[in-house]
Length: 470
Ligand SMILES: [Zn+2]
Image (cartoon, rainbow, N blue to C red; front, side):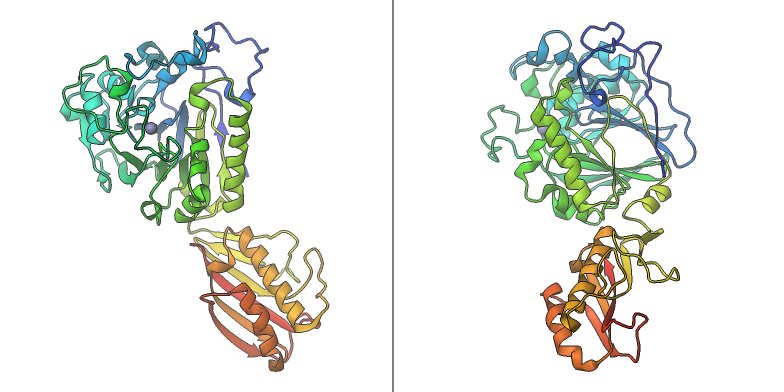
């Protein structure tokens, strides 16, 4: 199953960032962070119906296209300038002028129809004004994002100011839902201290070139971008409002993933659960601000985020993006079928658990619903019922159910109904004692029956259940 087509989009030459000379193969950078950068913007890709292409532009920046319309998220190509000649300290101080690196932008960015801005900080909003002016793209963002774009002469006809909560349909078939959001917890969770002085709003009347401190946050947004039949969540910070993410069902989630997320309680778990386990998860804002030589801590945190996603949502496909390398995704229905969410039927094959006969599946998932076949107390990896009578069998049965649910991205707390089959109703109380250990509060709806026989002669109990992932 390999629905992703990837290729390195380059112009006629691979140029190394540091020297702008053809890349020699002896660079020590990890391969995934040092590919050839395009010499000029690639043409719009030719995509099949339902496909979209994403290109990672660095920091929280993305180019998303269905081959016809191009949406940019927080383009910040200028970040690469800081590493070009003077090393990692080339970023201007907050009081200094911070001009957009227009040559670099022209090298990497071709067409743009929409630019969505999560917030006004320079690493999110710096390039948007110049790009909108050059391409005629419409800028969506808070008033601060609009004022920063106005500083570059972007006319009001190319600005859409939003507050959060809008869901705008556009003539070209795309729509953009604006998701209220909050900024990463900076300054050891004391954002009010904000030693940087960029927690406010940007006023009207600014004129480029702007100082770095002019790029005020101005509030925070995330976006659901519906394009080519997909729903792409784009975040620009390592924080979110859980209730605003609840019920969103992106098939592609660009999740703010640098170590600032560790300030937040169960950051990855709460987010992925709220969104119903997106089939494709791609970290964003976790590239060391363009540093081609990320330090060991950054690299290990990158692995840690991947592990967090795998633990919460094992069926999500995790893609570690590489700068400018196109990621082509198949139709949403294909992603959803192969992933954890959506409406397609999917067989669940939990580790160590197989059906007694090939007449049924251990589990099936459709959308967020998970159905677990009648389970007995056999030891995983075998078909042997455990020793120890009704209590031991009930415990093993429910452990097997738990394993099956987890393979489907669900938990015991998601179970909504069970049916318990007993060989002898005299075991009812003993079964219940163990059963309650697995459902200590709000137990699922249930029916219990005594039956004359079960397919496994040694089984005293069989339990089937249904769950709905939350
Ligand atoms: Zn910021």
